[in-house]
Length: 231
Image: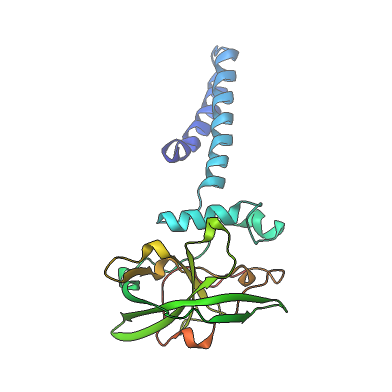
């Protein structure tokens, strides 16, 4: 499709040529009709292709952009959706894909998270993850939602803050999805910060999002994942 769309301008020129020649010799009207119709169909197809061709160099980025483009799942307003071409991401960098040591909490302490609204959400501390990034060692608390449905029973909540917040990334911190099934038998888990994403309240005030605890601050800039949204 990309190749065809690049050739549409050539076909437009062909139309002009056909009509020019038609004025000096006999060119069947039927041929003109077929050529014009073909170009029209290609133009429509190319426009549709441009709408579908969202930015994304990884499967994660493409899925994020597809979700934001879909009006039924997007946090964006109708006006923003009209002009949405794709989220901004940091370049994918393997140094932000870390092998962490996971230690499950012996006692699941309940935490009542304040949110960006007056709501309170309840999680339990599921454990800690220990890792090294940019030559420095860090520990983050990882949580599990209390009362989660069977569909999300394996989902863990890993919110974090870092030195890029308020500059290149969202000021309130970002999240990374981790599953209980991601933990290996040796007690390690792969954390890919290239898949870090913003909470929905980064895009609209109508959403209520858990406020990331200061204890989950990473004292380096995590230049990976989704960048700050610029309206």
